[in-house]
Image (cartoon, rainbow, N blue to C red; front, side, top):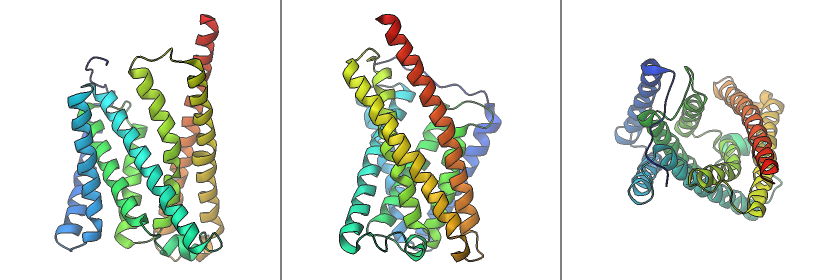
Length: 278
């Protein structure tokens, strides 16, 4: 395994202080809802945070102490578990009620498919854990780190939706993108573990799956969700739900563009390296 190394951040103390403060406020808010207001249905948020924190400790103790490797390995675990839970929720709903009414506005906005609320809570706990881990080991860069902003937006959107019990099914659909994250994290873990010149057929298959899931599970899925929100805009009330949902999806689509560019650069670089080796 690679040696222990700490991440670097050009943003300095001001950046970490802001995101740490927002994370503390989030934790106080969730704790108040569960402990004071008796919202026991939110307990999987705390369970998710504790689970992934324990997974972090297990990887750190048994595999590697490199903060970036540990963080990526736990992210792979989250992507795998979330993808499985989202598939279960969607297939179960499809079998029970069929596709006819699954994507009606009333179902997506006010409904909650079996297992969807708990799955969203558990994933929300992961994003809080990951935010803390990245702040703790400075696994980010820049004055406005994209990954920290991404987690902050998700925590705000997820938590408000869970508090109000609305748009749960919309957010479950947005988590289909975790199927692509699996292959992102697999590639990163493989390379950090030293298998850069791994079996070329396996690497080629890895890239095929990476690009296929990026297009279908991430880019197209998020575009369709955005289209559905715009098409049904007149069906929303005057609350904050629609503006927040549109803002969140705009951020996700923008991040998808940057991610696609990064993937393209990585693919081109890796293909050129193989040609030079040949």
